[in-house]
Image (cartoon, rainbow, N blue to C red; front, side):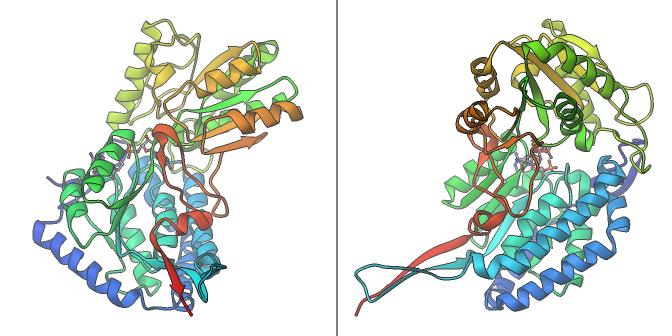
Length: 455
Ligand code: NAP
């Protein structure tokens, strides 16, 4: 079956691609395996020069590269340019720090000398999502390649042009043929690739079902995985917070990338005495968002990435409303071509509705009012996910309680959850395991080899 790039703004098919044949996959796996043998011998200095060159290409060509993203998945162009810049940042970050993160570590023992050595694992399969079609790939590829691994990218089927552009960036940056290859395949091909003895490990960013499936296959092969899955992040606001700033950030945190971010704030938990004011201001700002063509600079909300996602969001909202949720604004598709959904705010959300327990991947915010901090923490943790959490307070005791008790891979106080190359990123519970970014990210795909030399 051909793989299609469909413009979510118009619904038109932009380009189609033939999936790789078995023989072509075999050729790419063999090339990855052979390249690894030589590439692993390159020095950090050589790898850093190529990674810096990749950063330069991203910086110089960010405007042209950025245009591919809205074309294939609907992200507003401003965010797409920012995404290209962030990819350059992660390339530079690892070009500058990989050697230090992976330097031998001396350990005092009874032996004459003991130390820990970090060595690459081999070809790593990266199964990636469409929502940050450049960033998700670079945040895997920059550390993996700097550590001496080679990469095999199985990108989401709707962002093939992004995948090919990324492969081209690494090629032009001077990385040897075979060190970073795009595999144009559907998700049905992942099992055989992952089972191939030449593939050493896998990382998947995507939905929980995809993560479970890849982890089960990899587990059967005793291969390491990193999983970055979904989230239903809480955003808690207490009376001591700067309410105006909290509301503005809340709207941004929910609607960034058209509401399709794993770390988007999805559940807004507000203490009762400030709830009414929060609700009114939040709804007004959601209504004021500029929805439209993602290629236009002023657009704040573009179309959802695919027709299926539009249908899923619409189903989740309708079912939740039928169960008793109240629509404060939005709540339906827009009457126009493309996958547009109105910025939506729901409240009075019943526990047994999809909005309460599922991740909604679109511009749909859920508002909750709570009596005290205990209730806020209990509600925030009442989810199977555990990716990020944002808490707004200027009270030291409350701050400590949030940091200690929120079940999440990260807690941001008085700010929105965001990834940063210098900080580890990842989740707990059904949001996945393992970490990306910082020194933790580059140490995921290495053999931590213990060396001990006796007298
Ligand atoms: P998805 O449907 O799971 O797809 C992600 C990738 O997995 C795609 O390349 C997809 O290929 C592949 N895939 C799907 N099912 C598979 C299977 N059974 N076996 C092997 N591969 C499979 O997710 P998505 O809709 O693209 O992305 C949205 C999800 O990603 C959300 O849940 C979001 O929260 C999560 N996400 C998490 C993070 C994080 O860092 N934690 C970041 C971004 C997104 P095809 O396209 O060919 O189906």
